[in-house]
Length: 64
Image (cartoon, rainbow, N blue to C red; front, side):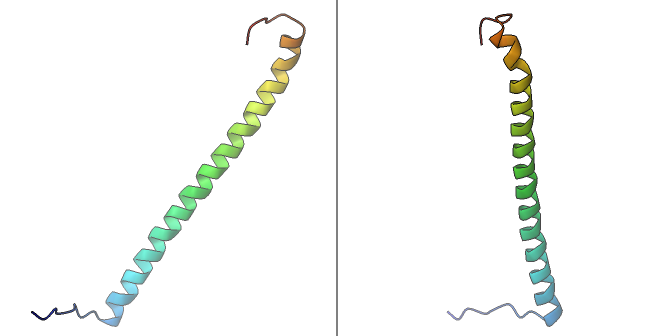
């Protein structure tokens, strides 16, 4: 049995390439947003830890 290939025009090929690039770009953007959120959360955790250090060190809070 002979496999017949789909014949695409140049415009169809360009559209497929553009759609693939848009999908890849969306994945990259989502990845960078995730990295940014992770960095912000680490910064906020460090700041909260710095603020609570004196309270724990002075013995006002005895458990962690």
